[in-house]
Length: 333
Image (cartoon, rainbow, N blue to C red; front, side):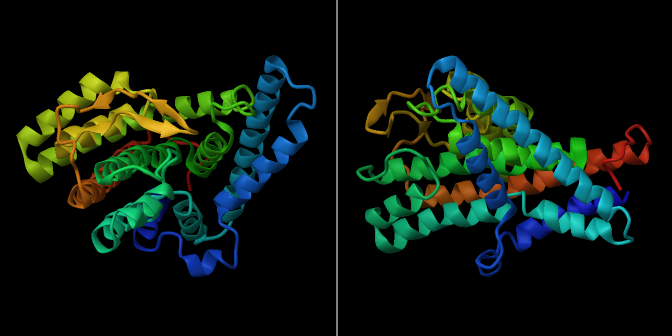
C-alpha cells in the first residue's frame, strides 16, 4: 500500500508545487537530463551517409538505447529507495517532476492573461511557447484554439499518460514514457532531417499514448457530466467519437474532441507549420469559431476538474488491485 501513497502523493506534489523556477535554475530538471542524453545519442548515431534506411535504423537505435538507459536508471533508483523506510516519499517527489499538471495549467493560463491584459501580440507570444505552429499572424480565435488544443492534448500526454505508465510499471514505466515522449518532441518531426531518423520515436510515442488518449477523452466526458450536466457530456462524447479518427494525430483527437464538445468550441482546422498551410479537419466544427480568452479559462476549469477525476480513478483502481493481491511485482513498494 506504500506505493498507492507514493502514487497519490506524487500527484498532489505536482499539483501544488509543480516545477519551481528558482530550483531548476540551479539544478537541471529530469527532462533536461533526458533531452541532453537524446542530443548526445543523436550526435553519436546520426549517419554521415544519409539515406532513408540508415536514418531510420539510427533513429531506432536511439530509441532502444534511450528506453534501456531510462528504465535501468529508474529501476536502480527504485531499488535503492526501497532500502529506506521513507524511500517512498522520495520516490513520490521524483515522480512528481515527471508529471505536468501544474506547469501545463500555468502555461495555458498565461495565454488567457496575455490576451486580456495586453492584447493579441502578447497572446501570440504566449501561445508560441506551447505550440509548434506559426503564430506570428494568427487572430484571437486562432490563438484561443491553439491554447485549448494544447491544454487538451497535453492533458493526455503530460498528465494521463505519465500516471498510467507509473501505475502499470512503477517508476521505470514513468521514466521510460517520459523519455519516449521527450524524444518525440525533439526528433519526431516531419522535415528533411528527422523524417526518417525520428520516425521510430514518433511511432513508439503514438503507441505509448494510445491508451492514455482514450482514457483522457473518457475522463473529460465524465467530468463534463459532473460539471455541466448530461447535455454537455453527451455533446463531448458525440464530438469525440465522431471526430477523433479524423484528426491528423492518432491520439490527440480523443481529448481534443471531448474538450471541443464539452466547451462548445471548434478546434483544430487549418494551421501553418514551417510556412506550409496544413488544411486540418475541424474537431467539433459546428461549435463556436470566434472563441476568446474566456473560453480558455473555461477549458482550464474543465482541465483541473478532469485532473481530479483521473487522479481519483487511477488511485482507486490501483488501491483495489494491490489490496486484493491481484497485482504484485517488484516495481511497487
